[in-house]
Picture (cartoon, rainbow, N blue to C red):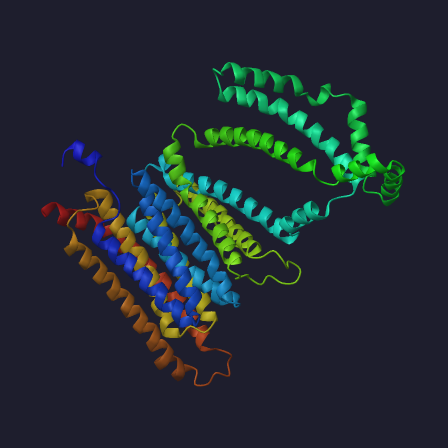
Length: 516
């Protein structure tokens, strides 16, 4: 192998061993999760974890379409993981389901694309989580605003005001405030319109000059006018002031009737239309500037990374709107009555946002630990997944998992770690596509044989030696106690064997691969 080939070598874990270790992790998580007794959260969380793993693998592809699909898969998988919390009321069952799913996810991520790749500085996963979290935060804010609007029934309130009118005094004060707001918006809107028309025609130029002449800066408006309008807004809602204004209108019958009708709503409609138009111009400019700044120097890649955080909130909000339109409304309790499906959408999106934030923290911590050398960079996912599988197995033992399955889970976690570390070593030396099936088969078979002997030894201690030495359970020892003691001894023995085996066998696999 020359130097150029070595520099372009795919140093991910060996493909055959990676497939085996991923299959073992997924199968163990599925069997043990179902054995706990909660199938729905187990299946949903496991599918979510595998979807996240597929998304991380897709993010490492240079195609923008594949990156966008990867971002969407990561967010959808995260949503499935958080959604599993809605499927059970038992916190221990939820903890085991999430623990098994996350353990399989970490292992599959390391087996396919690497949790902490060699070029971690240009890794897209942290950037994707940051971009998707920002977009998801905007989605949560939009859903929250829709929830508030649904709670106060904003549409019907607005229609009721238009239909029934408002008190003339309130209308008179709000008209003045609206005109004042319009003048202030003109100062912001005119420069924006001018920037949109760098070479305006004569008519457009005159229109812009006229708008600029009307628009007035806030500080150029006389302080007396500002104070007077503010006082009127406060006083206009007082019943005493409204009665006095009614008397004034009644004292001038003809003009009073005209003013009562004009101030009760008709003049507000064109004013509101003008304000919305000006506000739309200002908002469009703000969104444009924010978008340009957010997209950075590579807009296509940034949009692809944020695709999941954009698509998922849009689908959730639109789905809630469509369901509400056809009469399907989620029940959210009496305190939030009238919020429709938007309260559920807000809660769901907020949960996904929290999960994405937690994922960012986990990826940052694992990357920092790997850079410090505490955790091997190439086996960070295997180590994290196997440790999480072992701990979750112990938690499952406390909620009723059969002792034999507890032993199987502990042994599987050690097999995952040892096989994953071996696959990583072979991939680093010979490349991912190296043909090392024979040496990998010998390694995995030897590790599995050692683990099988350990399981048999613990079972013999439990069912043969333990009843002979302690014939009754009066001493306070239980099955869980013996299994826990056996797991501790088995772990110490097998971790030592696995580390020694892993230290010696990479050289053997290298010699085997070199002969092939």
